[in-house]
Length: 464
Image 1: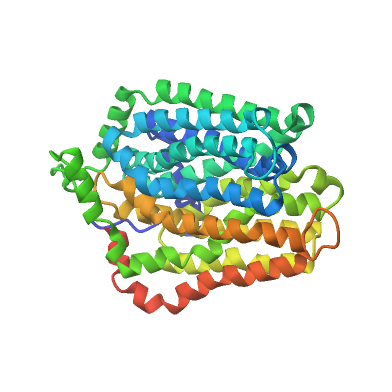
Image 2: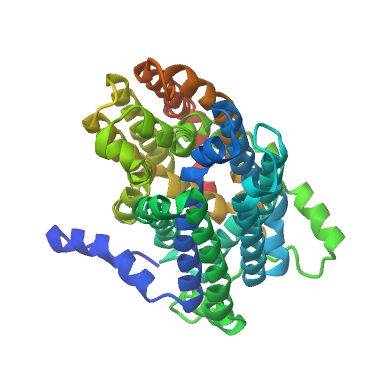
């Protein structure tokens, strides 16, 4: 079937931008549930993460390097858990996976919040160990939660709405990530950080109730039927579904199948995901470095409301991602990856001019544009190349370099803060950001140099 030529002129451009939003607006109740929990969890996850280093400093007596490494255990643990627990989604279904994961996270967040009252403070003392026990619950929950979201988008969208579905999921998660900048300061001033954390525990419990109501078994069945019907050929011929390799297999056979079909032998795939590590360090600096940088290197409005500036990137992503997705849906994925990672890395050098309001805002805006260009496309590509009933485990594998990024960045970010941006004494944040900029540039340069090799079979694979 041939595609219709797009309308010319201004009307054609407007239609090309707005049609993906219109298509997505007519999707199912189950997809609405996925998007709603994504936004609320973005609020909760990033709200806790923004304050966690300061919470560890003030309430548990941890120094900057220990606090950074502890946060690294949380963030890196989540990603490694996705590798092992992503298959849970494929086995028990999206609804159960979301309910179980949210319950685990609610328990874990409550334990972290009360940890300072249950043990002695200081590195590896009682309170610290109790907090790590709570972090374990959060890690297990999030290891199931994130793959469940992308499996839901894959199952509840069709060929026409898939690209915007992934973009909106990412955008709404970032909208939730922005909201702590508005909610956290007044709560923190009234009830301290522990009060803010209890608020997020309540939000997590609320999510469990919403998922149970909105994403009923009937709603999920209707969403899958709708997506299948929308993808049916216009001429009435039967839908050719991709083979279900899991059908009729026992748990043991499924486990063996997963082990045999890990894509570690695909060198192009492995290079593609690992070369993104340098630019992804900027994501980790959003919670490891930016909160302390804005609270220590700035005065006045920025320092007093550091949560707002630390969480400005998510609201920018909320607006930018769907627009960029609509405008670039037909662009070559690999080319978008090169351009997006370069745009994301380049403004880091702007911060090397010093801690000024204009350099901070320029960095946040330009970095967010670059992120909107490449991150949703990468997530969509990983989810779409996954065989049927293996989306969860593919998302886990695709996120493995993210695990390494969190580990590596957490290992050195505290040292850089202590030496270049200490709470007291002389600071040299310019050098810190200059070094971080050169690190981030490795990704676009690596993608560019490997372009010819990577393009062999890349388009065909992506189109599958």
